[in-house]
Length: 75
Image 1 (tube, rainbow, N blue to C red):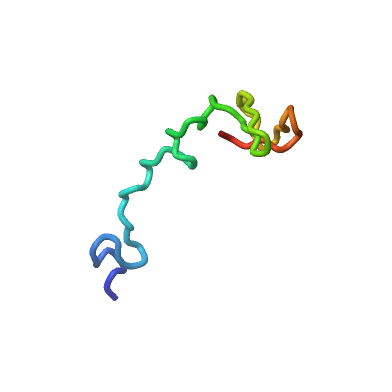
Image 2 (cartoon, rainbow, N blue to C red):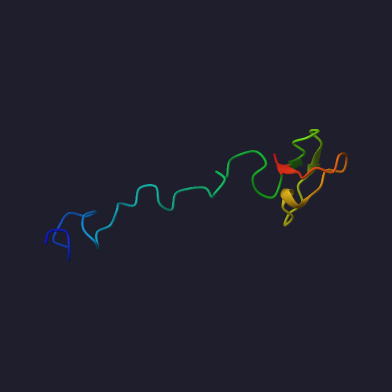
């Protein structure tokens, strides 16, 4: 059977590699270069627009807006 046991071209068959372009070269789940990504940035209220500094280790989704009480999101 072609493609098994290394008899076919790379990327074919059950044991073939799919090519490595794109794997291991990304900057993380959220893109990495966006403002607000990482340890700095702000949490913003989608309801009233209030911004508070993001605290490392604390998800913005677990923070309540100090003005209106809505759940904050990451800017």
